[in-house]
Image (cartoon, rainbow, N blue to C red; front, side, top):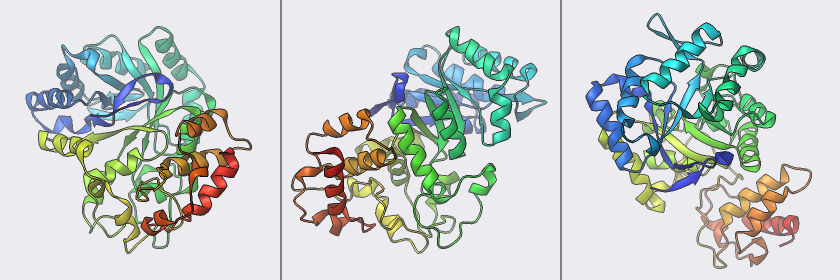
Length: 380
């Protein structure tokens, strides 16, 4: 298992994480064993947005005796009322729900205290002005919550959270289909029809990922498989089927992303996700699927897929392109981006313009031109 820094939190999280929302589908003993199995495979981050007692009890028992291994995303505002999940900012529900989370998870702290599911301006105002956000900060100051995060499906709300400096990480929905969809306050819109003619990643989403990279705000990924729709050409908006490895690789190649939290029904699915770590470049290759799809393309846009490798001068073209994209978003090149770029060792100035990489790029990116521009921008 490979591990990545989760933004400025200082936590080293597994690239493959555990999204816990399917646990309640199965007998408790079976799901508890699944969590322990995932830990044995090196998975060390788990999300518990679910407010129902069964899911929380399962995670608590699954971590018992091994709490230090796990980084937990626990949510403020996910409540259980009359046997139903209710997203709430009312303190009479928020406080008992969070206390219940601690009790059922058999822990006295949550690693990542998530401000739960803000997709609208109205909910932002309600959450960020009053007792709700004060309670989050109180738990943080008391050490009950080690780091503050936020979950959202709306890039505008995510961007707002990053810019306020309130959060150290975000839980965000990322997959090739969502990335071509403009911002919306209604999650259901994301699962609707995708119009023919949409081309490439939505600019607000691309800007969000770059902002997170620049500000060192980590991203954990939810809905990476588009609810399983990407696995079937009949339900995939691309008209082509993806594999789990391709979806995982897509998410992990977005700037700022640290971990993708997959949902599991059984050990075989855990194995399938973890197999990403030993997959070949061909098995991870999502770019060819997108480029050959009858609907949609990312023509002219670098998706950092690495298809351009190998470079005769050993330039990490994907990373050079990523730092260039980060830098041009700002009036001046941020020093942090400049230092990361220089740390690559072999920079864009080493490009000899052979254009061999361009013949391999599925999206017809003018790589040689970008190398010249990057060398001019960074001065090396």
